[in-house]
Image (cartoon, rainbow, N blue to C red; front, side, top):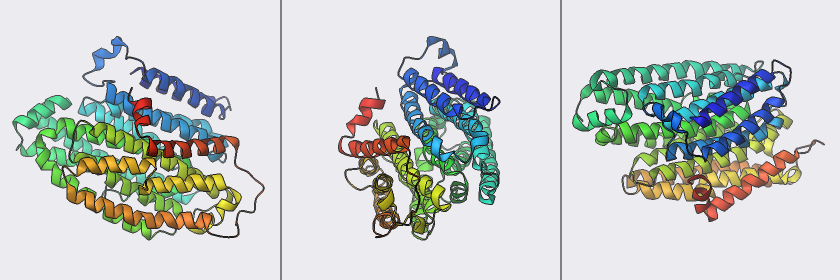
Length: 459
């Protein structure tokens, strides 16, 4: 709760910098506030907040995912100086909205109650609807905002209807009391219907097919830094909220949702990877890549064991690092070329080799190539799922093999053209170069020494 309060106050202060025409300060205020919040997340929670434990509890798992999200948000803020250079008039609002959305993520990491789940999702989502439309003169951005809002509202309706049915039959919103009821009455039809509606709603939020239809258009139309935030922090919070719901409240009716989740994973892996091959725009390809990773993450629900939470956290962090790495490259190309087609990346390695390297290593990590963090994360997830659904693991391996093809298209464009198409005197900023080196080292280090993750975050 202390971390939540710090992030909220930081967001309020960042928002008010715009009132005094000091929007650039919002980024530095955000970074400072996030560093303080990260430090506090390692401290024991104040006893004063124990009275709220029936709604929100800052336990070890909540602390783990909170630390990850803060670190990822910090990296995104470091990118913001360059990425938001075209949004000088409302930088403070964009940084503040990201922080408000992060508050929703923190609520989702520790919710103990279905009402808190709903509140957390809304706090997370509403700022995103606004940020998606930040490019006011871009029709794609306007479409992204409207589409995200309408489909998000539709998913919220599913969520509320499901919560209503569960409360109507169990008489409680508390996760553990719902768990006790489900264990005692596993065949309750109203409970099952409520659970299915909630699964559908959260499948919308994490972009599991066929509930993913909003994500390619929203990811492509949103400002690229906001897309990075959606693909990383929002996915972290959405998946852990999903995981808590099914493994706490509905673990007693595991047999009822086992097949549902299996079908969603299969559809997601085939559809997303196939559509990724068909794309000619790098940003849209990465959007379908993000959907495919939702499919891989869906394997966390099979073969659940004591390491499942850790495996989920490691995968989400490894994926978020890779997302930031490749989106750094895309943001640079987008600013210079005003487009994100594969052709726009031709010869990037000749003019900006470091950006090309961080983009390539990030995509190799996404594909699960050995000696990268993505490989170790996938290995842990697949090894767990082998004990619960070996068939799904085979499909996931096939999906990973397909994904290599569309990642290689972008790598080839960057490295295998003799002439560079980047005729510009503008060079990459020092902050960008430092961040690129950090991402490369982190991805490789976690791929070779995965225990470093536990040393830094699981303490």
